[in-house]
Amino acid sequence: MTDRSSGTTAGAIKAGIERFRLADRPDVAVLYPDVCFASIEAVGEVTISLLVDSVLTGWRPEAQLTTPGSAPFPIASLVVSRDSAARFHPELSNRDPVEIQVWADGRVTVEVEFQGSDVTMVGEQWRSTARDVLAEWARESGAELLSVFNDRSRSLPDVWNATFAVPTADRTVRDLVELGTRALRTAELSMTGWGAEQDIRRLLADGDAHAVLGWPPSAVLELRAALPKGSGELDFAADVCAFANGVRGGTIIVGVAREPARLTPVHGDEGLVRRIIEERVFPVPERLSVHQVANILVVRVPPQDRLIRPFLLRVASGGLEAFAVVERYGVETRARSAAAMHTALAVGAAALLPRTDG
Image (cartoon, rainbow, N blue to C red; front, side):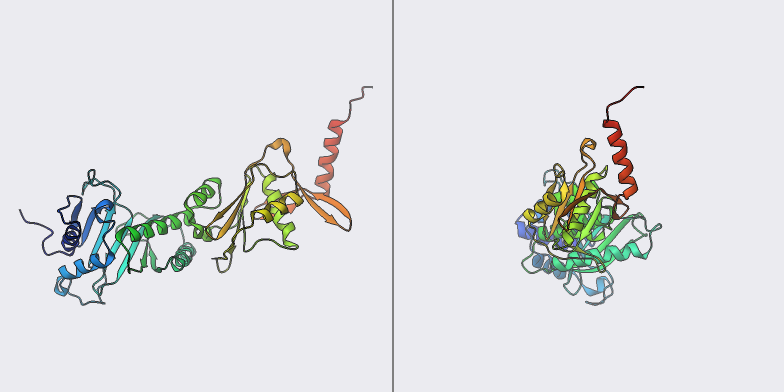
């Protein structure tokens, strides 16, 4: 039986890994001449420099009729499975959607696959947003975004790919797999999220702050570049009050600028946020939470019991104390009109008056 790994770049990766492990590894397999598949247990601690050296040792320019630097495709790729060595099977194990690619000139890239919008239904704006989010994420992660694309020759219309140039010094396979995992997690949350309850839960759990760069303001989401001060405190309190009056609650994320979308690092002052709310909103919303997620501050206003609504916005002016009922209308926070307030008060007062018969 012929060894299909002989003379291939994938076979060179396998040989390099087995030299590193000082043993044959059944959990390292050659899928195609240029694609090696292995358990993360087998390859996680392999250095990227060893990976590159193994590939270039086993590669000959005539194999792809090209020269270093001009090859349109990587000469070898490594994909991994989270299955243990004992459970690993080259045909049955699930592959991580992260691929480490080695090029003829020794460069290394990471390509990730993530769920997005149907390419047949979205325009360039969606692709541009994805690029902006991932480019900003990559810059702060020490990588560089090279491309975002949907390859219809091999993928479904809602499956996208992004490729990054990555640093390799002192990095291991596990390091790059985790880097790629963070990238695809950020991409998916950014492209499919919009600030709803489940999105905020994922944001708090995963800590992928850059994902919010793809979220537009909505009926349940407000974005602010900085912590409020001066007259901005009233606007901030108004948003909190409006979300408390809404059926679904809402979230304010501080540390996100728009046009261009970028993070403006905020290292939160929970005491400041709570002081503003306690001074300006009555009653104080229940179960309100403030979380630091990387460089942004997430203020979550959960849905409130209808028996304690409406919440009031306190406005002090010229020695007088006035109150307003504010609500969310689309992406705007507005106060109820005087006529609406008068009607609500009149109806409420009438309901409380004792009935007189006759």
